[in-house]
Length: 284
Image (cartoon, rainbow, N blue to C red; front, side):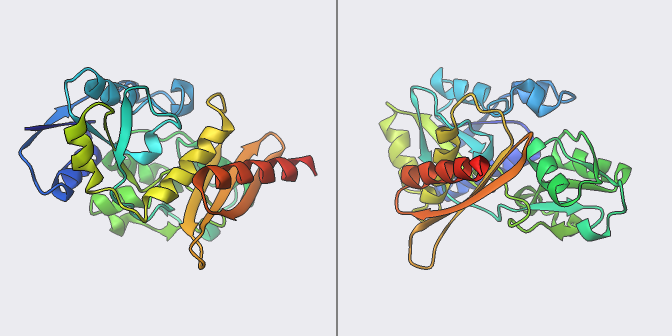
């Protein structure tokens, strides 16, 4: 019996079921875990500590032996994997872009209110529309969509809507040239214990060789920034026409939004080049 740790939301359960399906449908049980992010649904994410608030307790379920594997949205994972765990598979990635629900960007009136809990999304929207005002948005996808009518627009991940069959809610898909997604957005990540050979072999069979290096590159960028970095960042990797890794990144601070585009062969090398390019841009 494969024990699968996951959060209890409809999206998290869908993701766990999808991983089980990819594994061939083995006998399994879901180990439902409530995370600190779930328990503090009214507190802005950045006040809870940002990345990790939706995964730490799920990871602990695997480390403690309550579960064999943990299924996450890759975007929720911190840059560094805890000792004792390994990302055994990144099996697939949906469209990583963000979307607007409600009103398209060009149609938003002056001083329109856009709801999103992500500072990353706010700074990028404000960069192109300084007039916009922003409001907090928390909760599962159904809760967020139900709140959409209270604002001029809300921002959510397209992948979440796709997985829950709610693509009809989309008003506009935001171009990554304007809105870079969160590291790992749209991808699934499955962790297991380092010493669990059976689970590691099981997960290796569903690791996607096209998707894995892209998410590894984005995560390497996040790791290169350092664990103490709490500035808004975005990243999106793809395979260039000549087969290399191409990475677009964004980082914002009080001076504004800086972006960089780099190409290379290895995730760590590409990530380091991205940081150097951002630093050079800020120095000018």
